[in-house]
Every structure is written in structure tokens, then in C-alpha cells.
Amino acid sequence: MQEQKVTNLSYLNEITGGESEILIDFIQLFFEQIPEFRDGLQEHLKNKNWRELGELAHKAKSSVMTFGMNDLGHNLKELQLKTQNEEDIETYTDYVDEFVDLINKAEKELKEEINNLK
Image 1 (tube, rainbow, N blue to C red):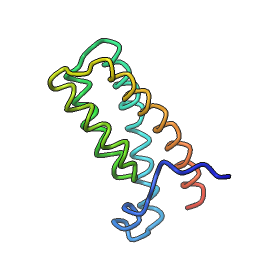
Image 2 (image 1 turned 60 degrees about the vertical axis):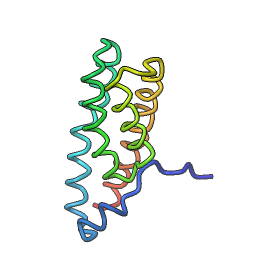
Image 3 (image 1 turned 90 degrees about the vertical axis):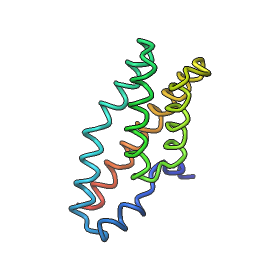
Image 4 (image 1 turned 135 degrees about the vertical axis):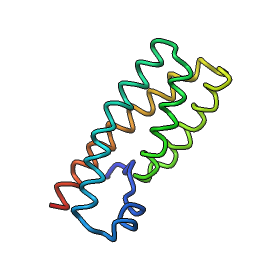
């Protein structure tokens, strides 16, 4: 049984008109952002920089939603809102762990997608 995909490229296909080269450019741009998001979220969490954690969650939210990861986007929004008031701090690790897990799966999927588009 095939694992359910974490990405959905229908939005990107729509805005690129299904143009493979443009789609690949979008994916590669996303790949450049992933380390900043993944490492940054983990770093801010470790150092208890809640404001920066929330700001980066906000920035990452737009990118992941572009790739159809809407649940993850909503969770990043929740994290952002929680960091603004420093509430439920004990849950921040779960949000960051989920992000790392899903972004790693997304990276694999999108690498396959690029190979299929070429």
C-alpha cells in the first residue's frame, strides 16, 4: 500500500499552467528554504527564542501551503499564535518535530516529482 503523500501540487500546477520548468523552479526554490526553516525552528526552540520561533513558523507556513501541506500550514499558524503569548510552551516541541518529519517526507516526494518532470 502506498503511503499517503504529504504534498499536493494542484495549486502549483494551476499557477504555473502545468509548465514543468516553472514547477521545477518553484520546487528548487522551496528546497533552498527548507534548511532555513528546519534548522531555524529547531534552533529557536532549543534556545527558547519564542518570538523568533513564531516569526519563522509564520514564514514557513506560506511556503508549505503553496505545496498543498495545508494541515502543516494550519499547525504552523497555531504555533505562531501560541508563541505570541508564550502559551502552551510544552507543545512547541511537538509542532517542530511534526514540521521536521513532514518536511523530510515532502523533500523526498518533491525530488521524485522533479525526476518525473524532467
